[in-house]
Image (cartoon, rainbow, N blue to C red; front, side, top):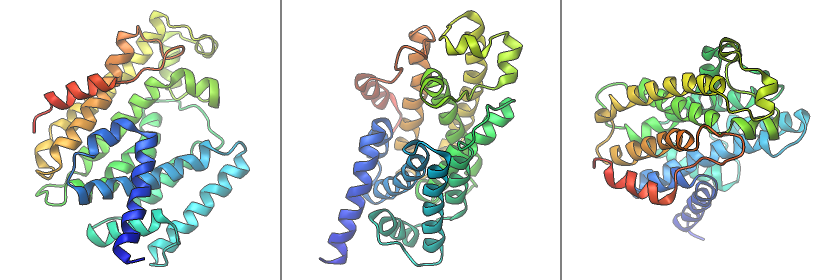
Length: 285
C-alpha cells in the first residue's frame, strides 16, 4: 500500500468519527477546502478519543488508565515516535502541514481528567475554566488550520468560541448529565442565588428559578459568541464560512431549548437538519 493510499484511509477513519458523533460539526466543517477539512477531522478524532476515555469507562481507575494511555501516546507523538494508529498517522500529516502546537492537546487531557472525581463548579469562573480545558483548547488546536494567514492573534476569539460551545453543551445536557453521569455543571452560586435546589434539578423541575439560572449561563455564552463574531474577519478567507456556520448552528441549540420552554430534562434539544440548511444558507460567504 502506498503512503498516499494509507493516509487517505487514516483520514477516512477520522472523518467517520466526526460524522458519527457530531453531525453539526461535520456539516459545517466539511465545507472547508479538503486539506483543511481533513485536518479538522483528525483534531476532532483526538478529542473524541480523549472524551471516550472517560465516558466509555465505568470506574475512575479505568478512566484514569485510559487517559494515561492516550497521554503516553501523545508524549510519544510529541517526540516524533508516532503510535501505529490511524489517528496519529493522520495527525502527523496535520503537524507537518500546519504550525500546530502540542500544548492545547495536553490541555484537552487535563480537562478530561477534571471529569474524574468530578465536583460541581462553585462559580461561573469555575465553569469557564473547565470549559476552556475541554473546548477552548479545541479552538486553539484548530487555529493554525483556520487562521494560518491571520495578521492578528486570533487565540482569544477561538477560545471564546470553544467556551461558548461548551456552555451551550452544558445548557442542553442538564438533565442527561445529572441522570446518566451524576454531574451538575451549572454553577452552584447561581443555583443558590436563584433559590433553585439540586433536589429540584434531580426532579427535572423547569421553574422560573431554573430558567433564571439557565439564562444567566446562556447570556454569558451569547456574549462569547458575539466576541468571536467580532473577529471572524481575521480568519482565513477559505475558512470563514465553515467556522461562522459552525458557530451559528451551535448557537441555534440555545434557541431550540427556549422554544422547548427550557425543558433540558425530558427533551433532546438540537438543531434540525432543515434548520441547519437554513442557517448555512443565511451565513455570509
